[in-house]
Length: 211
Image 1 (tube, one colour):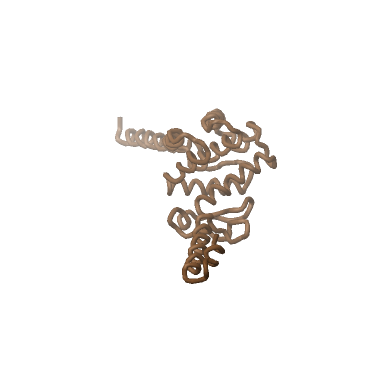
Image 2 (spheres, rainbow, N blue to C red; image 1 turned 90 degrees about the horizontal axis):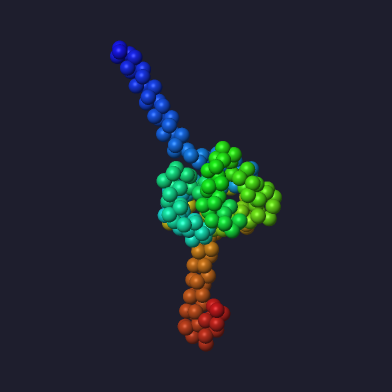
């Protein structure tokens, strides 16, 4: 066998190996196809959040969507994206079924996209369940420190607004998004200031007002 032939065969083997690895790495892809542009955008951002802040993302899935930690870590190991994990567990949460049920349903027909799966499981576009599903995104973003109103056209860069970063602006229902945590801190400070006034000789009036 000539060197040229050997090189050609080696090249084919290498290319095949790369393609196989890429296919395996995209068991669940980034083209979510939910049928709703706002949801697709949020899922893309959740991909970014889950990649950057793995532990807080897993805490969200286990603490608020009822997903077992072992399931979430296993799905990451199977090359599921954070966006896909989120949506599977969010759908399960709305339907009141285990997240693994939705995972298995998706894996049976991975090429159909999330929109087709949601319809098949009874969540139709425009329905109350679908609206509840979208509201779930807003609550998650609120807990992550960047409130986003449903259907508001906004892009969140989690490299700038993740844990420990500055709070988001413009995503909330008033157009001046602010986390509940930040709001709570300001209220607590206001109470403390009023309490101090009462202790400084206002016969307790400042303290009573702070309650």
